[in-house]
Amino acid sequence: MRPPAIEIENLTLAYEGRPAVHHLSGRFAPGSLTAVVGPNGAGKSTLLRALAGLHPPAGGRISGTAGQVALLPQASALDRSFPIAALDVVLFGHWPKAGAFRRLDRRARAEAEAALAAVGLAGFEDRPVASLSAGQFQRLLFARLLVQDAPILLLDEPFTALDERTAADMLGLLHRWHGEGRTVVAVLHDLELVRRDFPETLLLAREAIAWGPTAQVLTAANRLRARSMAEHWAAEATPCHRAA
Image (cartoon, rainbow, N blue to C red; front, side, top):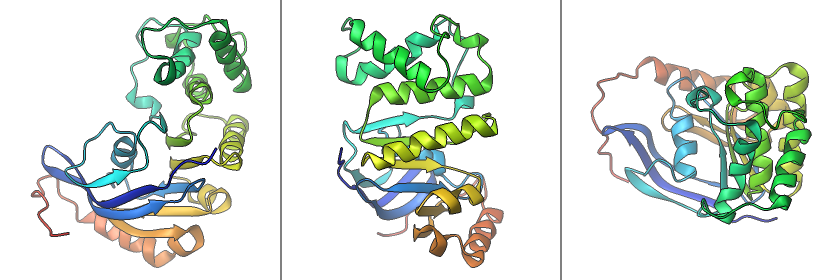
């Protein structure tokens, strides 16, 4: 599986006209494994949503993602009160290929059951989502990613609420996907994990502080610059009109 490169050109993303990401340019190489790090409010989740086609750019462009992407959003952003079973959540992973109104066959169900087993949730098929713990729900989202089988995988804080053993298992899935030639981009906060397991890093503070090999990006000077920029952010900031 060899996805195209993701090209980002002069990208600006905004909420209500206020920029969350400023004039970002760069490239996720095909089959790369990249961490996106930065202070709270740096635009990391907004960038992932834009890569997934869920947040339209205020300026610039993204190419190489159309029809190629699966997104694992922050679990805290999802409504778990809807009465739905765990297996049905995983079956949703078939919809991008099968269509929302096409009946899923036994093979699709078998793949969903296998995905649940792969993340340690065998026997949870009929469990209501609302009854799952935070860690079980996060594993459920990983199972849906397995079923989606996309060449580009975007993960927003994928190890939240997972115990150490389960996090290690899910990290193993990320490495497996990377080994299969998929492009993996993950928003993370654990810099030691990033240094150990992610060869590429984008340090974002609403604009790119550094983007490249992790050891070169996560220097003390770069992290200090990102933190200093965050200390000066203002909620009432004016819209960005800087030229390309």
